[in-house]
Image 1: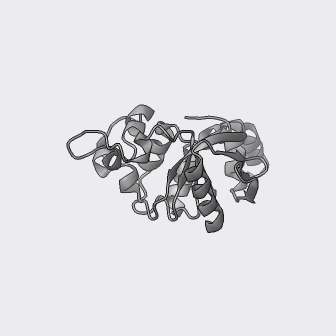
Image 2: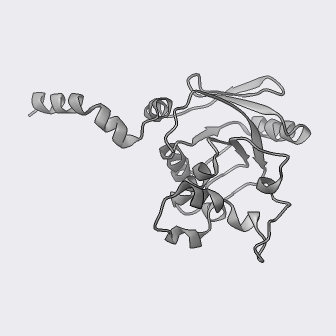
Image 3: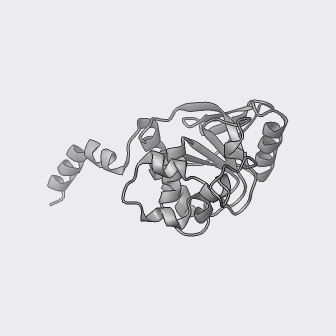
Length: 198
């Protein structure tokens, strides 16, 4: 979903697991879908962890725990590894997460998140550990993600870190533009350049 980014302040869903791959984010059997409906992929985010083999809800999984909520997912190191399926980013966005915080993302998955209006925020391992600790102590802990200034702040401690983002993707997120929107917005400039350089 195209949504403009500015400053997002939210409680968080903690997923302190390392090496979460795209098959765990969205199992391969859901890749056969002929639709890109957000609700379909969002409903099946972490499907095999959210539900038991008999189809009942796994009450021990964090997404099924009403203690936690919000539009920020705090994940362990090496999030989104494995196959390059864009469906994993669709599922994260479809569930309603707008930000994923981790100390490391697989490159392709990181770009897929950006292309689907989910902001991947890379922080140090010490800052990530502090976030998990704050959320464990108080599930109502809020985190502020300031895209214009490229900072993430743990409001429980007041500690902040700067994060990097490609300048083009930052512009697109702040303005709610996908790649096609950006090209259309700059069509006149492109045509003028072509005339001058024929």
